[in-house]
Length: 122
Length: 175
Image (spheres, rainbow over the protein chains, first blue to last red):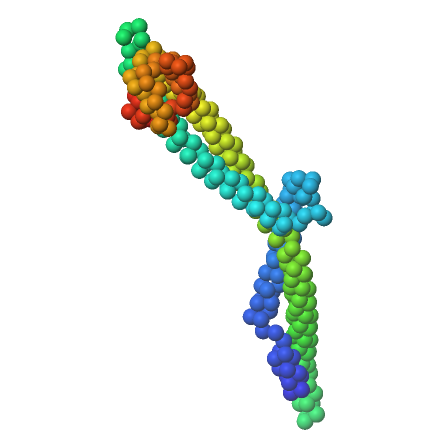
């Protein structure tokens, strides 16, 4: 009896506690959920990747230009367009100022023309 | 008597011993089951964690690429807007330049009409800015870049800038 009791006591001490077992079970569940979530994410990413690949123009397909490089190229293109728009806006402002001045001159010229009597009237 | 009592004790303890043995067996079996489950869970956890780590690592590149594509889509939208803005500005610039040209042309026409009303008028003792003295002249034609006058010696052409300032003002060559 004594020996059996000792063996039982030793075995029970070496066994995981109920709390540890529960924690292990919880960790395992979490790890499995994480794996499942990663699989789901992979599927979504693959779909997004395919959509992205399809949307790229032929000249920039993978193998020729990476997505990051392509994005960089587009960023440069956008910067160029913004600069172009700024220049055009400045030119337009200048032209509009000149037009305003020209319209004032026209009004003045018309006023002068109408203020002079015709030679016959003189 | 003593042997009889010992026999009785032994017989009465047997079921108890059997029960204890059964309990010990059951305890051992459930302990073994618990240990076995625990080991299985540990292995499962380790495998799941390794799989998750490997998947996460393999997805890093894909995530970056998909992020780049999202950025690409956004940039494309911005580029379309910027192109539209540039085209619109070009149109506006073109329109403004045409309007400017038309207005300038109309101004020149109005001034030409106004100046031509002076044709036939006689100017007494006209002296040009370069020192030439033309005497009495009759205005024939007052154009944007040339003025023609009739003098005693014939027709003389000169630039409007040669007129004295009051006449330049009078004939709208200067404001």
